[in-house]
Each structure stands twice: as structure tokens, then as C-alpha cells.
Image (cartoon, rainbow, N blue to C red; front, top):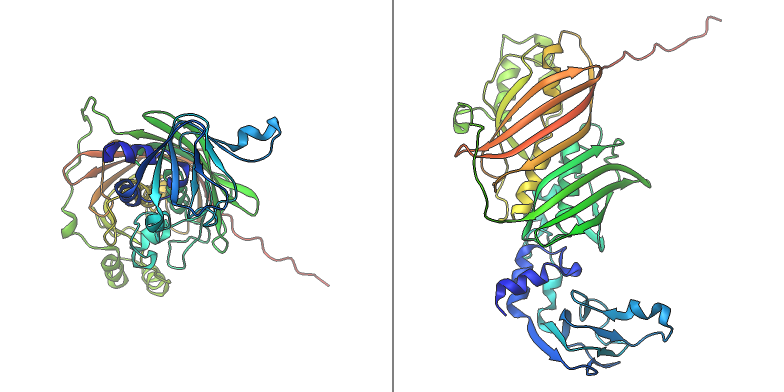
Length: 427
């Protein structure tokens, strides 16, 4: 068997789907092929494990209850697993081949590959990763269940940031799919506001696993309530048609533009801006985002200045990311919500306007491979806003002018009501 076919097989083993692709490749290089005849013992009770067994073909029976009703629960088939690193070092039951059986065995000395420091990189400590990678880091609790938290230095707006929901949920879904299948689209719905002070449980539902496509649904849960839902489709890369009608607009080179930090410093001292606005910017608690943003048209506009419903800016993750394409798409999903729905408010801004915005849904289509730690141009347009909903569309291009992502979002937009004056007794 060649390494590629072994990696393909391992990618379908549920136990291994939570591991980074680098771990799967290392496991594929050290597994040993073992064959057993019908009726032959794979392992006997009280026998020490040789390692971790993955059933490649055939079936085996675990000695257990004799009642026929539960017997199928102890029948092991392709992609099932047992052995060292999963339970005790000594097996508590016999396992017997019920047909010609082939297993891939991960030797005991290499079972450490089943445990990793990061869900993205098998050999790197989480605290050494970039901030956005740490934000997207999840703890696997059980098969299909992950836990995420809101880091103190993660973007927060009084509630869990919508991009964090999308990035973490997509990361959870990605960890249950053969790593050769990469997300090509997802649709998400924001149901309730998330609490930044408690963990988020992500439960992944395996809707479908095909040869080329896989579908996952992820429920984000807090306090027993589903507060966010994501549906994602994954595809194995294949050869096909290729064309692009969209063209990248003319834009300044990102290296010639001001960073958000530099733009903030300039706004504090810009005499063309209202004094009250400059004082507000100067005294506001400023926490740098893990995403670097550079606007193509820096202006003297404020959040109360009317402007066209469109925006262009370059963005990239701060720090170097690992090469896992799934991670890069999760980072782009995270970054896409930082400045998106608010563009629908641009034509309606005015002095004294206090507004409230909440994302309702968000959809993305990934057309080509990308790197989130290299500059991407985000082109945003709001075609319409009506009643209490604003609609935005976006396109993302790499520096070569290739269209890599298309996306849409609808958000609830309302003028914030002033607080009710407190009622005092006239007595």
C-alpha cells in the first residue's frame, strides 16, 4: 500500500478526524499492515496491546454479551479501531476475526501521535501560535463534540463576536471530515447572543459522507440553548472547468496604506474631525485585532458621517499560520464579519444617530485555495436595506487578482431607542 492510500483510509477513521493533517501523514508512515484468517484471534483477553488497531477490511467480533440483540454493537467493521492509547494497556476481552481481516497497526511507541498540542499543528504548543489561531483552538471533548472559549484579547462587542462563532464552528466541522475534503461553502444563522464569559460547546452532526463531498451541521450551545447554527459542505479537490468573470478593482498596494493603529493615531490629532469624536477615540479602550486591516480609501468620515454603501480594504492574519488549508478558510470566515454588515448603515448615518446591529445569517463560498496570512482584498457592497434588515455582498481577491471567496450577509439594523427616563414619585 502506498502512503497516499493509507492517508486516505486514515482520514475516514472517526478517531483520527480530530487530528491535524500533519499527524495523519506521520501515522501513515509508521503503521504496520497485519492480516488475520477467519476465526483467528487478533488479540486475547489480558494480553498487552501491540499498539492501536484500525480495521482496513473485513470484520472482527469482540467477545461480549451472548444476547443477539446487542451482538451487533460488538461487531467491528472497516474504520473501527481498538487498542493502546484508547483505553487500558491490557485488553479486557477477546477479539476474533469473523472473516479475512486486514488491520493497520500503529505501534505502541508511536501512539503519542494520537495526542496533539494543537488541532492544527501536531508539534506546536497552542500558546506559540498566532492569536487568531489560538482563538480558533478547540478542545475535543468527545467524538463530534468540541469546546471553545472567548479569549481575553479576542475581538468582543459586549457579546461573542459573530466571526468567532463561524470560525470555531467551521473548525469543529473540519475536524470531523477527511482532511482532503475542504470546505467550499457554508451557511450560518445567528439565533441568540453569546455570553463571552462561559465556554461554547460545538456539537457536530455528520449529515453525509460521500466519495467526493461531505456535509456537516454544527450547533453552538450555551446554557443548554442552541445559539448559532452552521451548515457546511466539503469537497475533495478535483480537476474541472475554470473561468472568472469578476475582476479585481484597482486598489493601492497594501504596503503603502496605514494600519488600523496608525490610522487611529492620525484620527486623534486630525483637526478636520470633530473634537468630541477625537476625544472619544483617544479615551476608548483600544485592543488590537488579530487581523490586520488597511483601508483603500482612508477618509475623514466618522461613524456618524453619511457615505456610500460600499467599502474596500486589504486584510490578513497577524503572524504566520500553519499550512493547513482548512485553518486558512476558518480564519477568513472569522475575519469576514469584522466590518461587513455595518456597510448597510453608511447612507443612513447622521449626527447623533445611535444604531444597533445584529447579524442574522452569513454565507460564504470558497472558490480557490488561499492564504489568510497574505493580503486579501475585501470588496463590500450593500445593494439594499429595507424595513429593519440590511443586505451586503462581498468578494475577496488575492494579490494575483484571483477571486477566492464570495459571501453575503443579512443583518438586523435598528435605530437604538434612548433609555426610558426613570420614574420618580411626586410625593
